[in-house]
Image (cartoon, rainbow, N blue to C red; front, side):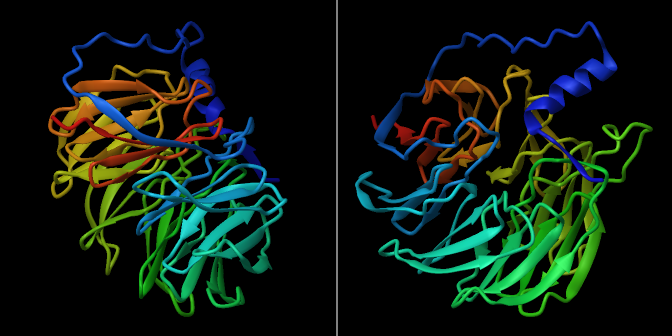
Amino acid sequence: MKRVLLLGLISVLAACSSNDEVDLEPADLVDFDETVEIDRLWSEGVGMGAGKTYTLLPIAVDGDRVFAVDAEGLVKSINRSSGDENWEVELETSISSGVGASSNHVFVGTLKGEVIALDAATGAEQWRTRLSSEILSPPQSNGSELAVQTLDGKLYGLSVSDGSQLWMNDSSIPALTLRGTSTPLITSTSVYAGFATGKVMALDVKDGTPQWEQRVAAAQGRSELERVVDINAAPMLVGDILYAVSYQGRLVALNRGTGQGLWAQKASSFNNLGSGMGYVYISDADDSVKAYDARSGALIWENDQLSRRQIGAPQAFGRFVAVADFEGYVHIMNQSDGQFVARRKVDGDGVRTPMVGVGDTLYVYGNSGDLEALTEEEE
C-alpha cells in the first residue's frame, strides 16, 4: 500500500536516522550589511492563504495579471502593476493545486481530483472534469491542451476547450513517496513531467505518446525512507536544455529533444529550480542555496547560512535570487556570488508557496494569504 511522507517531516526524519544527537533548531538569522533597499509595490489579501495543511498553492502570472487561490477556493485576479483586484470568485471547494494560467483561462485542481477552468478575464466557471486522484500541482496549458498530474502517478492530457480527456499516462508508485507531485511543463509539442519513480518523461502533447524517458535518480539504501527518490520539482526548460532534480538523487541537464544527459550533479531537493545569469539555482534538502553553471554543471557558489529554516524554491528577479523561509522572511542574495544583500519579513505565518519573479519584481504569497509585490528601491 502506498504511503505518503509530508515534506515538513523529511529533514527531521533524515537527521534523526543519521544522528540521534543532531541539533534540529533552525539556524539563527545572520547579521549582514544590507546594501539594497527593497520596496513593497503593493499588497493584497487572498482569503485564508495556504491554510494549516501542507499545501503550496502556487500563484500564476500571465501578462499583466497575477492569479492566486486560497485553500477554501477563493480565486483572485490582480493587476500585476497596481495590485488592484480585477475579479474574485468563490468556488466553494477545497483547492490543493494552486493556479495555472494561459491567456484565456485559469485552472485549479482540488482534493477530490477535479480540474476547474475559469475565464481569465471574468472568473466565470467554464467547465469541471473529475480525474482519478487529488491534484497537488497546478494544471499547465499551452492554450489548446492542458497537462494535469495526479497524486496516484497519472499524467493527463485534456482539451482546454471543454476539459475532455485526450490521453492518460500511468506511472507506478513506490511504497513510500513524498506528498506532492511535480508540476508538468507543457509546450506546443511536448509535455515534460517528473515522477515518484525518479524518472523524467517527455510525451507528445496531442496523444501522450512517450518521446523519451530518463532516470534522474535510482532508489538506494535498505529502508523505505532511504529509497525515496521522488521528483517533486517542476522540470525547467531554458533554451534547448531541460533541467530536473530529485529528492536523494541528482540535478541533471538533459537535451530537450532526446533526453540525452548533458551533465549531472549529486543533489537532493523537492523544491522547484531557478535560473538566471547563466546559472541554475537549487535549494537543497539541507537548506543550502547553490548556483551551478547551466552549461557545465560546475558549482559556482553555495550559501549554507539558512540551515533548517525550511526554505522554498529559489527565484531570480532583477540581479538577485531570493528564497523564503518558515518564518516568512524573504532572503535576497546576489546572483553573482550568493551573498545576502537584503532581508524582508512578509508573513509571520511563513511562506511555502514558490515565489514568482518577473523582470525586477518578485511576487510573494504568504501562508496567511498576504500577496506582495517587491522590487529594488529606485535611486
